Structure formats: structure tokens, C-alpha cells
Image 1 (cartoon, rainbow, N blue to C red):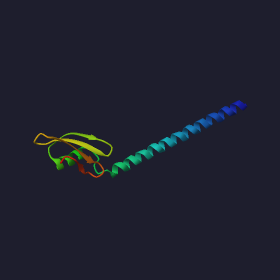
Image 2: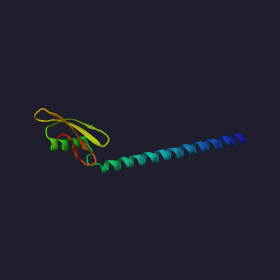
Image 3: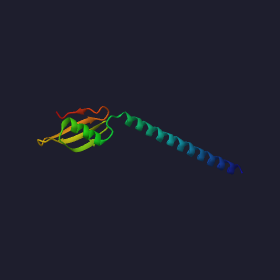
Image 4: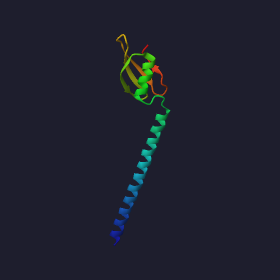
Length: 100
């Protein structure tokens, strides 16, 4: 009888621990999602298309490729004279860096 009570307590504690761990992980995932949404809301340039449009309006030519890095977009353009130019578009500010 003593063994059965100990076993039952062990099972109940295990389920309680698993439930609390699941709740903690869910809350953590929700917090991470909220932080990501807040970070994206702070960005002025949110998509590759926006970065390409900004770079094209500033430099001219045709957009060849856009690649995202942490806080910027690298945009590769070909100008009418055939020169290939690579510029950075800052995602936070929308400023074009390089390409002059």
C-alpha cells in the first residue's frame, strides 16, 4: 500500500511538472513572437521589394538581386552603362549606403 501511494504521488508530480514546463515553453514562445513583431514594426524597410524600390530610385538601373542580412538589404543593380553596383539599404532607416 505504501508503495502504491508513493508511485501515485510520483506520477502526479511528473504530470504537474510536465504541465508547468509546457506552460512555461508556451509563454516563452509567445514572448519571442511578440519581440519579433515589435522589432519588425520598428523597421522602415520590411521587404526585399521595398529595398529594391528604394535602391532603384536612388541609383537607377535594373535590380539584379536582393539579399537580406541582419539589419540591411544588399541590392545589386546594373546601370544603363553596364556597370554593376552593389549597395546596402539600411532596414531601420531606409538609407542607401554606397553606390556613388
